Amino acid sequence: MGPLNFQPSEFAKIAIMIYLADLLSRKEKVIRSFLRGYLPPIMVLGFVLALVLLEPDLGTAIAISVVGMLMLFVSGVRPLYILSSILASLPALYVLLFKVPYRRKRMMIFLNPWSDKRGAGFQIIQSFIAIGSGGLLGVGLGQSKQKLFYLPASHTDFIFSIIGEELGFLGAASVVVLFILFVWEGMKITFKASGQFERLLSMALVCLVALEAVINIGVAAGVLPTKGLPLPFISYGGTSLIFHLTAVGLLLNIAKSSEVCR
Image (cartoon, rainbow, N blue to C red; front, side, top):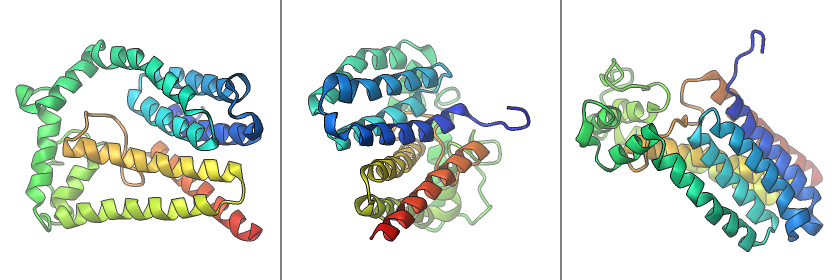
């Protein structure tokens, strides 16, 4: 957009959560109805997911769908409707994961990275080496060797591996603890929020940050298949950082308005 460049899916994550929080709070009285309470938000959510998948960005689509379904559940939608939608989406998820060649290869490499250690498994193996090299205290801040053209995307998707190498187990654990504290404080805002819109929005924003952190750290540690999700507040990238800070700004605004109401 002129001189401004940003990733649309990052904007979509925040926009769809604001929209769903507003729609679900307005439909609170008819939320258990399929036609009036469940169908409108699920159609909008599905449309946004389809656009994100066209990028293609399956990781972001999964994150949006998980948080969106959680918002529907918390708002009071019948669990049967949500379960039916999840079951209906499983065939499409299977096709996206196993019928697309590069995604199928990622799944196979996740099970055994050493089967192609110089090809598709190279990145995750280098991530293991980075984390393992750090030991308890790390090799020192800025002293990583894996980020010197060994570990691809070391400043974005695999930044946690470099943290583990440079700051060791204690440094990596500190990052995890900080995210836990963020979730704790964020959920305190959710429980003290003054209205349904504020509760749903704050819960969604906290869950989004937590989910992205779990996926990113899980990928770096080899317990999840490779996904292109950044580590919130830490990975390099202007769009991701701006919209994560936008989420924090919204949380602070909700906290402030709730204090005024009390």
